[in-house]
Length: 190
Image 1 (cartoon, one colour):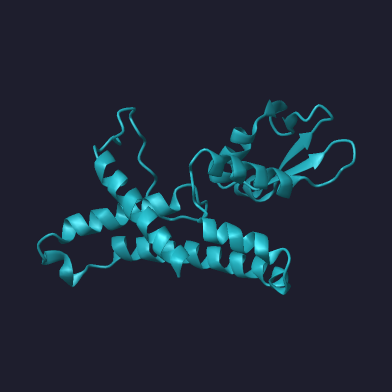
Image 2 (tube, rainbow, N blue to C red; image 1 turned 45 degrees about the vertical axis):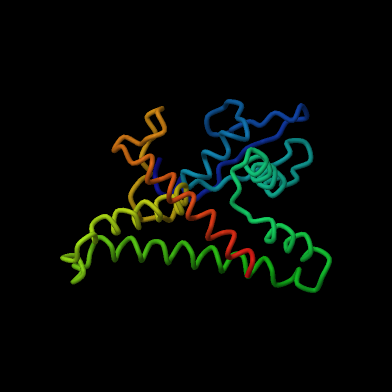
């Protein structure tokens, strides 16, 4: 796919039967397929075939709700509560800009950290245990950025079915996920 094709949103049409039709490949798709397109960096636009109404927001919210209901919790309960609260307060006008700016800063920061890890020689590299710490930081950043199209970091390792990645770091990833969950709890308390 060319760069120009990747910037143009993938048009998905919803038929009266609620089936979703990919206009590029001329086949029907599921919400999981749409989620995959987005994770690969593709913009999507979902429109109702009959009325022409843009349904993209509705379907993206549905995808998020399905992930959250399966236990793939990214949004802490306090954040969800604050989002609901923002719909009924004056904060409604600033919340979208705040969220967009926050995610952009997170993406930029992640890219810069990955660049710094790989391009600058670090005087601490001769310190005992530094290499293990560096690997742990890289795995943490991989876990944080998996699926973000603007990520310039290394690709996520594939799970080979036994809970470990191809390089055998499944236990490290479990520990990182546990630490990340702890951090999310602390952040939500703040």
